[in-house]
Amino acid sequence: MSGSIQSTALEPDPSLDGQALSLGQRIGRAVPVYGLVGLTVALALLFSVLLPDTFPTLFNLRAILSDKSVIALLALAATIPMITGKIDLTVGYGIVLWHILAISLQTRYGVPWPVAVLIVLTCAALFGMLNGLLVELAQIDSFIATLGTGTVIYAIALWHSGGRQVVGDLPDAFVAISGGNVLGLPVGAFYVLMVSVALWLVTEFTPLGRALYVIGANPKAAQLNGISVRRHVMGAFVASGLLSGFAGVLLASRLQIGQASVGLEFLLPALVGAFLGSTTIRPGRVNVWGTLVGVAILAIGISGIQQFGGAFYVEPLFNGVTLLVSIGIAGWAQQRRNLSIKRRIAERQLHVELAPGPTSSPPAANVAAPR
Image 1 (cartoon, rainbow, N blue to C red):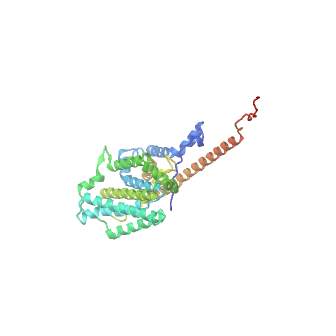
Image 2: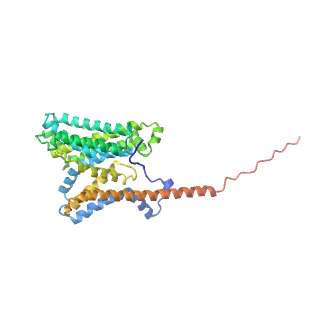
Image 3: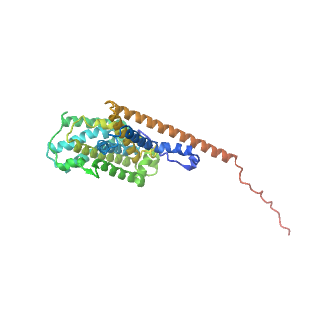
């Protein structure tokens, strides 16, 4: 089976890692797990000190949550196939068509907004199934397959919109999907929270989630253990498509204008957030909360730099550099841990070879009893 990435859990194993006795050892093991979380907090504190009038404000928090809720949903959508070792690029291409379609169905064809939303979600799920078929049945690498289908989706968006903006009067109920507030915060942030909790529960506490992780680590072993690799991978792509379709609906509700030039810029930060998620909380293992931390550090860093007057190219530069640095640190930490494990295994084998064998008394001679 073709694969694009490998997901392995690098959780501490005392039997192999040894006990962390010194403070330095404990810190060394905590850095790969919580280093990105600490960096996120440090960035927030730094910008709060440097920009006390603009950064640590409720207005800025609302702006960040509102702007990054769509990216967070796309990052979570990309996380699902990544758990199985696959990449889904259509999360960035698809949202172009989904937000245009959600608006055009209502403004051009008079479709009621609940039906329009249902149609968008169905189409997104079907494209996810197409990705799964190409990857599992046609055995095309997921990067190539989703790049091809994503380009097709983008072409359909251009054809459907004619390269022009799609505008019109939208129902208030549809606008309220993303325009409302809960507890003074944008409702989009609560969508992200609910989706995150649901994915966390499924991936960490259900047989389905364990099966997805086993497939990501070793698909052949998963198949030998009776796990239907094809069905689970296709289901992951369908779930990813469905979630990206919901992100498109949320974007359409927020912008209230459909245009083909909007959406592609979400692809890189969404993938960066998902990849960063595999370097924190559970290093080496794609996980939900790690993905949110990855999106958060991008959002905080870019917001702070922009408030300093950063140029227009700062955002993609920050995304790329953050991705490279974080993956480099995670790889370095993984190599150190692997070397430590190999050294301890060698020490165990040497100890077993040098240990004296069990003492045994010589067999008693057979003495005939006197008659």
